[in-house]
Amino acid sequence: MASDIYQAQALAQLVLRFNWTWIGAVVANNDYGHVAVKVFQEQTQGKGVCLAFVETLQRETIVADAVRAARTIQASTARVILVFSWYTDVGHLFHQLQKINVTDRQFLASEAWSTSEVLLKDPDTSTVASGVVGVAIASQHIPGFDRFLRGLNPSLRPSDKFLQEFWEEEFGCSPSPSSSETSGDLNASLPPCSGAESLEGVQHPFTDTSQLRVTYNVYLAVYAAANALHSLLSCPIHNSPSGTSHCTSPKGIKTTELLQHLSRVNFTTPQGKHLYFRGADIPAMYDLINWQRDTDGTLQLVLIGGVAGFDLQLNESEIEWSAKYNQVPVSVCSESCPPGSRKANRKGEPLCCFDCIPCADGEISNTSGSLQCDRCPPEFWSNDGRTACVPRQLDFLSFNETLGVALTAVAVSGAVVTTAVFVVFLHYRHTPMVRANNSELSFLLLLSLKLCFLCSLVFIGRPSVWSCRFQQAAFGISFVLCVSCLQVKTIVVLAAFRPARPGQGP
Image (cartoon, rainbow, N blue to C red; front, side, top):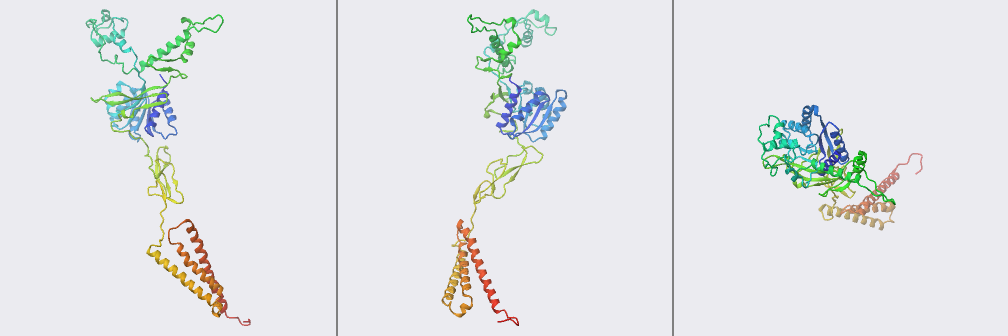
């Protein structure tokens, strides 16, 4: 059989397939469980999967460990529980979960208990663990094996004690006179068999060849050993002039030689199974099974896919989930942040646990689970949901509005009046009154006033890049020039009417 590392890898692929990021783990307190958890964490590292807890089960203290693990599962928010342990330990765990009424968990099973008939027939299991999804040793039909089993008969195999005991239990008769003498007082009174008894049509786990898992691996092992012996005992002809050959004697086979040939076997079984060794392991081959309720309420195994190497094949429509779900269960520590928000890790908690912070004004995130918000370009702004950048809304004063028309009329009227005064001053520029009023400053003041009135028109109407740049510069220059002229004229007037001090000339 393939290494247990491969089934841990297969379950990790299954977790990633269904986007489960918050997983609980219950494992055997030995290398089987610890190595499985380590491999699972390695396979999911950096992919957003966290272990909510890891509980261990030990055979010597199984009752106390099962109670502790059941309470941890009850208290945890993880809805998917990974279990790597022996089926007897899992039975104790399910019993404790049934006592505290925990029936809403989805269990992932290792091959050590995924096909256990004992668990499938346990009422506690039916209550707690329906819908289990797990990996199982690959099963395949062995041609002729069913016919071989049903053709067995104690009369043909008188030395097979197991077959004789099975015959006595199944048919209630003694297959041979000698068996009644050696079977003890319990079966001494059994009548002799008629010889017409046959396993044809008998429904018994012994004759059931529909789930040949370990048996099929034994079958492959025998095939591999046979191919290795064939290679070892063959007589290759050396490239020598004499054409001699070197043969290994069946009595002189060394284990090291057999292992060397076994590591190099490469063959295909009659069923088309290609077998070879990769180091010390064969390629991983697993079935994916699902525990589903039959019409009578009992649990049965249903094949839902398989694992070949690193290739996971799964028929999701065939899966029957836990009794509390009618769809794929959700197992996350924190719900994925919706668009318009970003993740913020909680201090001291795993990366799978986080808060969702809404994006600030002018920032957006348009995907779920964003780590950061992106700032919008200068000409854009974030919408109400912070999911998209939209052009900034322009509010401006239009020439068609009442206020726009009124301000335009005032500005034009002011510019016209200022122009008229400018023309009058220009016409009478040689008169003493205009000259005494500092005509140059007067003309400059009137010009700056006219520009101030006209600049206000630039602030009316739809803004553009050039108008926004021109507004500030034009109005600033015009206004500063106007104030400067007023200040200079004021200083001149003050200087002209300042009284002369005694002793100073006019």
